[in-house]
Length: 266
Image (tube, rainbow, N blue to C red):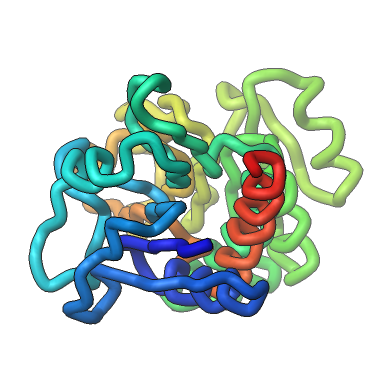
């Protein structure tokens, strides 16, 4: 069985090695080499996200743009994996979106949190020890991030919409508040994990002038980055942290899921 990987970042290179190590014939294209895709391959694996604009493949290492529709058409009727794939007629495309898989989502939590911590440490002039840090959102990523920050000695506050969501964070040693009760003037380091507006301009104005906001959530995000920057705040958009800070681990998580699905599709 021949497998073709097209586009993506370093995750795709590690993913190719991972699948190849399991005995499959693997080729890569638009990944830093000029090799054309093997259109005769049995399976195609696209990156995460498969596209950023809906037109071209997400292929930052390619020498020239790759049209997403062209790739889809070449693999019509074949098994195609990708992350955050646009809708496709199921009669024409056998599509599996690995980003929608629960095990992939859960597996990416740790590399996301570790990447967020690395960004914070690299981009702040102070240690995390005893420093106030605000985590917006008490979901999977927010809870683990709060736990890791607490372990590093930060004075962590977690914010959420419902009191029930905050109980587990208190058990981990973090302070927990509803959004409307936040003393925002205390926080120079803010992580957002909520894919919905939780800080409007009025709240942004209450933050310290040198505050750093790290956006971990998908669009629209927890705040308007343009308004934040207009107020002099520092903003870091941080999508795809697993691929940037732990590409090998991220590839193994995706690869394990893909190999399992390949068995089911035989």
